[in-house]
Length: 352
Image (cartoon, rainbow, N blue to C red; front, side, top):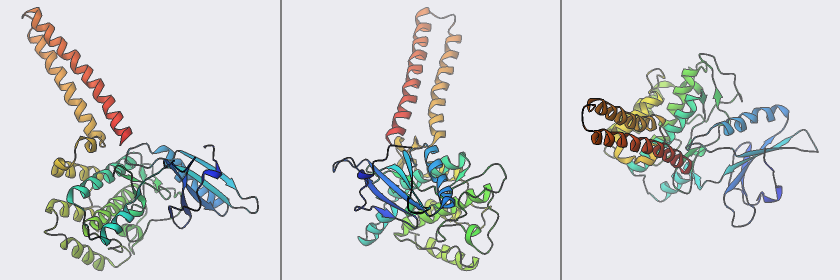
């Protein structure tokens, strides 16, 4: 909950809207651009219950590539059985969809580095969700936001699913995502039971569509409700149009993400490794720190240095006290650097 001041809600300055919700500035004064409020209309108690997962998961998701829910307030309409849900969120600059539309209008294609950076942020955010058994289910440009620093963040977990081991999900909303971005096994004629592995690979498909469209400088390119042969032909056509414009490794990666056979589709961890292996020069340390495995790798290297120095001390047992003291001082210094590194990681993630 948060102390909701209705007079701060700038309803005449709507920033965006969807089927059930609208977003407005939430300001103490005209110079306050820090927060927005997403207002969700629930016509009855059942609709209210179906909206609660977005609040719960929004509070739970603590990652620099996620848009966090910072507070909520529920208001019952005194005239009927409906409710208004107000969620307080940090203000973003724009949606990736609006950014893409502007780029398309201005004929200003994304550079490969821009795409790789968006790609890496997106997949790190999805990896965080999947590691917590949460599957977004509606990844698309509308639900990806860009902040004032140009960083991409995942929003709108309203139809996300939480799945325990091997169980079909207990649906949180009963909805699936947008069919232009949903995987064929979710919305197609051969749709499957939504188990954990199916939902994970469905998010991979959606990410593949998003990156394909950034490369193509266009949107709504695919339709997963098409017959499989038609969908495959359209995927092949779109991938072929990228040849010569982007690195072949990126095109191949997108192709593997858009494999119609979800069992053959890449895992999120493999995608991250592929990006880091092929495009490390495009990802400075501020980006790599988004990946927990990279953080662990950096700290592991420090620990290795300490073990090597301890070994040297042991081997130097018969050497001068001066040399042993120097090695001990080096170990102390590395331990200080490890502590500083951990704090720096936390600071960078908090500021991302």
